[in-house]
Image (tube, rainbow, N blue to C red; front, side):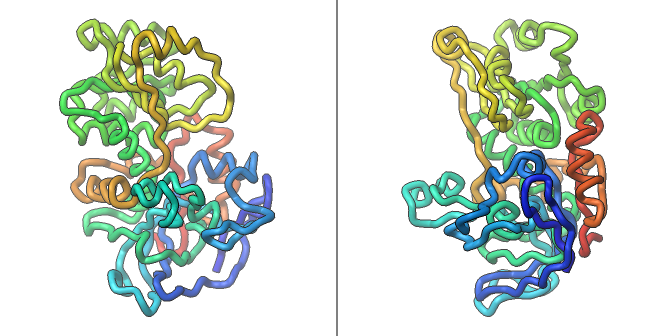
Length: 357
C-alpha cells in the first residue's frame, strides 16, 4: 500500500509499505479521508517532538519511521478473530488515543493523561495510508447520515467537545472564542449545541470571520480594529463573557484570552504553543479570580463518542470547515506546505486516500 511516513525532520515520504494485518482484536480500515492538522505540521517541521526515534514507544512497540495522520475514517476490510462489534464494510472512525489502562490516571478514567499515552499517527501507524490497523475498542461506528469526510473530522471535533466540557458551560452562558481555525469553528458549533446564549469570535482573517458568521456567531470581532474586551463587555451587559475558549495557539494568546473574560470567569486553553508568555499573575489571574483551564485531546466515551453523536444529529457541519482536498501523493506540497505557508486561506485540509467516496 501507499503511505506517508515520517522518517525525520522535514522528511515525510509517500512510499510503498506492506499492507497491515489485523491482530486478534483489530480491524483493518480502508482509509477514506485523513485530515492534516497543526500538530502534524509541527512534528514534520520541528520533530521529533512526539514520534519516538530511538527507544520504541512502550505501548505500541514502534519508533520512526511512522505513518502520520490521526484524523481519519474509512470502511472495515478485515477483522481479527476476537472482533465482535464490526463487520466487513462497516464505516468507522477511530479515537486514536492509546493508554496503558493501569496507571493512576487510567484508573480514574483520564486516559488522555496516561503517563505512557500514545496516539496513532505519532506513536503508531496512522491514517495517511491506504489501510490502517486499529484496535476494535478504539473505533466508533459512523452514523448513516454522516459522510466519510465529516467522520474524519470527529477527532478535532472531539477536541472541541472536551474543551466545552472542561469549561463547565451552562445553558445561557456568554462565550467568546479566540481564533477560529478548524478547531475554533468546531468549538463554535459545539458551544451552540451545548446551549450557549451569546457567542462571539475574535479573529483577524476575513475568510474565517465570514465562515464563523455563517455558522452562527452572534458577533465577529477583529483584534486589529478595536478594543475587543471593551466591545465584549458592551455586548454582554457590561460584564464580559463567562467563558473564553483559546483556540489560536499563538505566543501569549492565552494571556490575551484572559483579558477578555469576566471577573470570576473561565478561560480554556486548547491551542498549543511552546513559546513562553510573560504574565502579571496577580493582575491577570488572581485579582479577578479567573480560572485558566488546560484541555488536551479527548476521552473516547465522553468526547469522541459525543462528537460522533453531534455529527449524526446534524448539530455540527464539519465539512463546512474543509478548505482543500488533496490526494495522498500530494500530501507534502498540497497538505503540509500549504498549511504552513498559506494559513490565511487554509482551514482543514483533507487527504483523499484510497477509499474516499
